[in-house]
Length: 163
Image 1 (tube, rainbow, N blue to C red):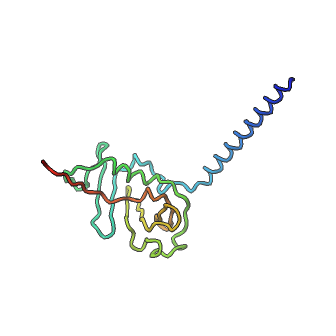
Image 2: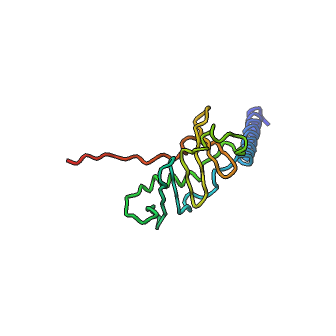
Image 3: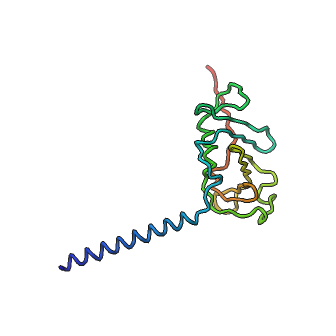
């Protein structure tokens, strides 16, 4: 075997070893991942209820692939916005902790900023964490830290000037 062939063989063995280590690390990370907020498929969610603070809850129902107000009022509903709310069910969790580890008032859960119900599963959104762009989310007796981008936002109104 020539010197060049031996070098190629060692190089291939090194690359194979690195790939094997990367695959092992990827599987290990997936096995120890804390999962998602609800573990529901966002496309299967048919009912959404959203409440901000003490305001009245907004109720929506998916009908033939489109969202509509649950009370049947003919209002224009932004399907993309409600699909984004449904996608919160699959938000990746950084880690879970029991609610008893916290003072709910200190993490904004005594009076949550938003309460989101997805097919009857309740998520209560509290304060923004002191470090990083994360927020506290309560599900039952557990609290998760998730990216702040999953915090529900109040709908914005647009002003249109007519000519």
